[in-house]
Image (tube, rainbow over all chains, first blue to last red; front, side, top):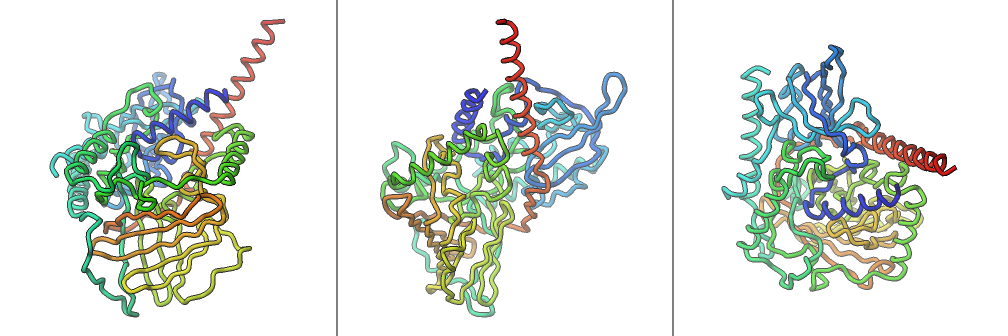
Length: 135
Length: 353
C-alpha cells in the first residue's frame, strides 16, 4: 500500500505542476476514485466555511428514505468577495452533484460539478476562457 | 429556486466575470522605473494600505530551456491564455485530478480571480539564471531526515503530523515571509498605524505585525513560524527584516518537494533571514522584492521580485480549522486502506496454509 500511495504523491505533484492550482487537501486520499456518483437532492444547509465549503443535501433513496449527504466544494472566499451570500443559494434549492464518494463509504462526497435541474452550472464555469479571449 | 433567485446567481456570475476583466486588464508590467509618490498616512508614512493580490502565473524559478530574463508582452499573453485554458479545462472522469471540486465554479482559478502581470520569466532575479542556488550538504541531510520522519509515520496521509502544514491549517505558503502566491485566495490587507504595519494574510488568516520603532531582533531562543519581523522606512520603501524562524516551515518547498516540478528540493532552515522591500510604484501596484539569506541551506543569498496588485476587499476570515473535515476524512480513509491491506495479507496467509 505504501508503494501505491507513494506513486499517488508523485503523480499528484506532477499534475499540480501542470495546473499550478494548489489543492489544499489531497482529495484522492479523502475520496474514492472508484466510487463516482450522482446525487440529486434538496439543499438543507450550505456551510460557507474554510478551507472548503460543504453542501448538505437531502437525497431521497429508491426506497423512499431520505439521507442527508455532505458534499465538499471549494473555498467560498472569492465568491464572498464578489458579493455572493448564503442567500444566493437558498435552502430548498434543488441541486445535481457529480462527484466521488468518501473512502469510508459514509454519505460524504466531493462535488465535481454542481448543476441546477435545467443544466445550468451553479456558479461559474468557463468564464475565465472568455476573459482571456476578450482581452 | 425561483426565477428571480436564479437570475441573482447569474448576475453574480456576470459581476465576477466583469470584475476579473477589470483587475487583469488594469495590471501594468514590472521592470519599469516608477516616478509615483505614494500618498501619506496621517503620521507621515507612505501609504500602502488596502487590499492587494500577488496572484501570478510567473514561476519562482525560470523554466528549463528559457534563457532570457523577460518575455515579450505577446509571449506573456500566449502563456496566460494557455494556462487559463488549462485551468478551466475539464478533467477526465475516473482520473485522480477529477477527484476534486471544480475551481472555476468557486472563482478560484487564477485568471478568474485576477492576475498580477509581470514580463519576468521567473520571480527570482538573482542568481541571474533565475534558479535557486545550489543547496548545502547540511540542507540535503535535513531534508532527508524530514522525509524519513514522514515515512516512519506511514507517508503523508499516515498520521495527522505527517500531513502538510496546509492540510493541518497551521500555515500556508502565502504567509511567508517571503510571501508567495498560494494559487487562490492570494490576497493581503495592509493596515498602518503609528509605529506599526500589519499585513493580514488571507491564507490562513495570519497577521504579520511589524514594529517600526527600531527595536532589536529578539533573542535567538525565540523561534516562530513566521519569524520575528523588524521594519523601517527607506524613503518610499518599507524594509522588513525577519529572523528567528522555527525551521518547521521550509521555504519555498514545505515538504522538501518542489510543487511545480515534483523534484525533491530542500527548503530553508531556522537560520533563514529574509529582507523584504515594499515600494508603492503606482496607485494600484506595490513592487514586492525579497532577499533570502540562509547559509545553512543555500550556497549564496538569492533574491526575487513580484508585483502586488490592488484588489477589492473585504477578506473573508479563512478560519481554516473551522471546517477542516478533510484531515479527519483523509485519516479515516488511510486507516481503512490499512485494514484492507491487512485483511488481504491475512487472507493470503490462510490460503497458503
